[in-house]
Length: 335
Image (cartoon, rainbow, N blue to C red):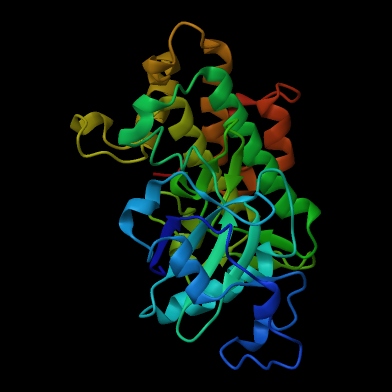
């Protein structure tokens, strides 16, 4: 994986108009792939360095910064030693710059000066799910059932947009808690499109190098490199289980029998004890029946055979209780 770090800073003084790359490629540091990207703002390294106070670590969890129009932004820096990351940087720009959706991060611009590769995104105050719900920062945010429900449905809508509405379709390939960011109202935003793949509608699958994060990888992709939309749906299923339970998919701090989330949820489903997996920190306001429904949807998404996993549009219907689950389909989870 590419080595990135994120910083926040005051970009109110940063300029872009004088630093655009023109179509003749007069800026020799810009890859050819970026020359045809429309509506892309190019910032200077000097501006971004000043805005983030030399990218100091303290700004990794700061208050954000503002563009001239008042837009609060975050800065994502690619390590110069990352060769693989250079391709991921270009992929992320070319894919995310051409799509907009409430549940996808918004790219404001980039810096491609010398060896520097930097992305400028909208700043999201409530950070990522792995930092908050699943990490040490969860105590500062109240993840009620309504908040979790909103996050689950929002991520599903973002993925459905990528899989079914964008042409060519897009497979994210790295859906996980750290790539789900939350804004002030806990609206989830799918981020990090460095591994994303365009998926033409006439293909049934793509054979490609294996990339992504252990614990979220679909079996057919992890073993054979066979990529379809159903790989993202498997990853979403793992994420869904994490959101409802408040646990990461693997935790060595738990007793041995509870360290692997997918196995534990399946075991308690078979025993008719799914309620035991719902995060107790939600409190008494949890809709227990709906929470258990979401766990079942998660199990459906992680079925071993990809044909048994639902499409994202059907997942949305299930999450909204507009489509029932045939529990006979819950028979072959992967672990």
